[in-house]
Image (spheres, rainbow, N blue to C red):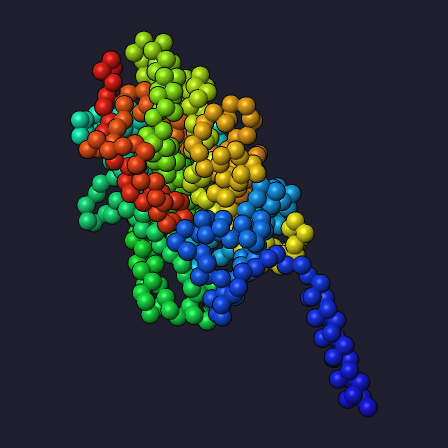
Amino acid sequence: MAALLLILSFIFLVHLLLKKSSTKRLPPSPLKLPIIGNIYLAGSLPHRSFHSLSKRYGEVMLLQFGSKPVVVASSAKAAREIMLNQDLIFASRPRFSTADRLLYGGRDIAFAAYGDHWRKGRSMCVLHLVSNKRVQSFRPIRDEETSLMTEKIKRFSPGVVNLSKVFMDLTNDVVCRAVLGRKYGGGDDREKPFNQILKMIVEMLQRYNVGDFVPWLGWINRVNGVEAQVEKIFKMTDQFMEGLLREYREKKSSDDAVVNFADALLQLQRESKDSDPVEDDVIKALILDMFGGGTDTTFTALEWTMAELIRNPRTMKLLQKEVREVARNKNGIDINEDDLDKMPYLKAVSKESLRLHPPLPLAVPRELTQDTNLLGYDIPRGALVLVNCWAISRDPLLWENPNEFRPERFFNTSIDYKGLHFEMIPFGAGRRGCPGIGFAMSLYELALSRLVNEFDFGMPNGGREEDLDMTEAPGFAVHKKSPLLVVATPRASL
């Protein structure tokens, strides 16, 4: 009798649990395959694949990547819930094994879990690199490097110039000088150039690691060589960073001035108390973060903007007219950052380009730290959350003719890119929004204004502007697949 009661009690408990789970309203979901789930649907350009899926499954959909639930939000309303109304519980990051190894066990801030370490690291980065005061202190660097950029382009005239390469060099050099106090563009075989190391890190972070989603298949990375490759890149990076810190410590014996981000971090380390030390690995990880966030995204934004301007000659002429009018009133003095606020069309062009081409179209993944309800759907704790910024900024319910490049649309709206308007969030929003918007945009706008002021642009070999290839390359930050090759002709009047 007792056994029967025990069995009945167990059946009743199972029934209650099943009933409780059946009342959950999960977001719509596509067909899952065994083991891999919906990974097959991501494609080479996930932001486009998820945008197509959202037209069928809605603004919030649930995917399954191996054993990991993945929520994709594709509307401004959903983004506002995630990044504003419920920002705190959506503020953490999922743990990815490759990022964990290359970024010193989560000691950076971009991929760090939400908590005390992240708050402390972000505070250091804001205070010593991307605060308004620090951004202004780097103004001479931006001025000098954009001047060097235009001189470099003139040396190619009347030939073909690779603007993608020019923009990459510009952003690397500016960030190098602000973060490290010097450029790392060359070097011999004994010391890998820093920008090459960063390129390898970014490429490795973009690769799909099956073990992160199907843990029991993690052994594959040991067999196919990925794990060994990650370890090789980490050792190369750490060797470079160790030499860098050693160089700075030796310099500090005779010079105590704080002139760049690395100086500031090492000074904080010296001043930190034993109870709250700043470890070397934290300094290394934060330096890598500042390069990852400050170079790739700014270069990408410049590349897409110039590509759109070349494809749209009328818009280019309107922008050149505005910029050159401001320059004409300066009597031969170069355009500087004080002039940028006199250029409303340049501001509109910047916003429109960021709307169409957000540098990180899916932002950086988030991880939900507790069960919640999102627009009527039950979302489980631990879900990986992706906000499709690219889909939101092309939503026809928010934007008229959303796929057209029309800067004029920003003349009669207060919508901006700084994370306060969820119709376009190219730099994210909320606690995990990009803190370096001012740093990035000050360089972006100065470089853009000087380019359109000093050069006229055309296609190589007499090609038509409207035929410019705008295909996207797969990656975390989405670049043009083919480099931006142009003929840049200096203005005769300059």
